[in-house]
Length: 396
Image 1 (cartoon, rainbow, N blue to C red):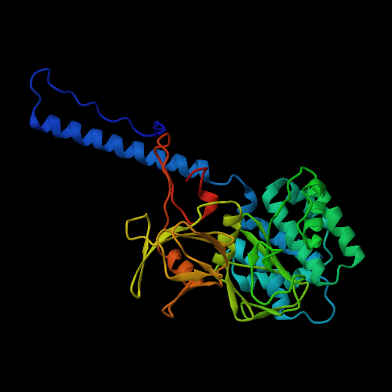
Image 2 (tube, helix red, strand yellow; image 1 turned 135 degrees about the vertical axis):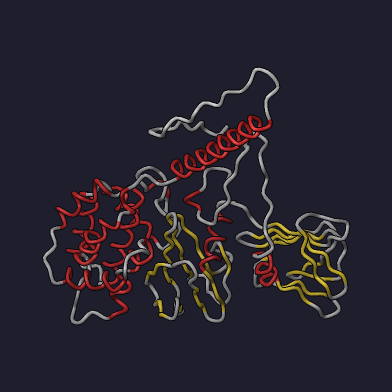
């Protein structure tokens, strides 16, 4: 039920007096207008309540914190000679995305000024300990760790990092972050102070060892992706040179992946949307599930099964293909007879005996604009749809 809205400070409405006899047409119209207005107020109040309830209660979004955050980044940025523009861009990347209302030229100016000043990390930590939410502190911790990694992991920087995070009240979380980003493998949950890793982890590479298969990766090579809310970090643990938005990501390096960016791995492309999809797939969140009808050379995608459906395909970390009819086709060397299921990778293709083929990667791309199916619970009467997960409640 929507919350009732109570007026505050508004002048009271003039009472409407209706005749005890048959009401006049004017009275009926006035009553109808009043009821419509009350209904609109109730709906408007309910919407305002939902926005207030969903809005993160944190001061971290305030632009007033930008100068302090810039000073912190500058304090952990080791400058040996002239700083390149791409190094400045990397250092300010988090703020550029998280505070889109800020003018980037002003951020750069403040950053250059801060580099020339002696920073009081203790005073800044005291301020941010009160004004930053725990989630924002973790984001800042990841960014600072990225900075000291890029500058060579000097012992004094590492010590300053742990001391600063301790002053923020995040000493245990900082240890968790450093451990997880350096583990280079699936981190042991028993190590973390509360039994849960601060960052979700996802691996790409050899299908026998990694969550998501990539072509031409040896068993010892992989890419690791980490996520914390909107933050996605990619680490290159292969001999291959990755291109991220036109920039080289060398072996052993980190970079943040922003919405709309693409990672080029040889001839393979991983988009930021792909990374979100795989993270959600690992958590079994809203996985695409479609049916395919094949008629001669025409392929038709269907949201629900029909008597014409030939295949049922579920996309996740891998692809599960189930034959609903006998097909003159194979997948990974297995004949697609009715009832047969095959676990495959996106790079695989369904091969037909007449020479045709069905590309699973192309199917997934088409499914991306095809829409999904969602179960609406009878116990819940209101849903919110958004592409921003921070605005959604459970079951939206």
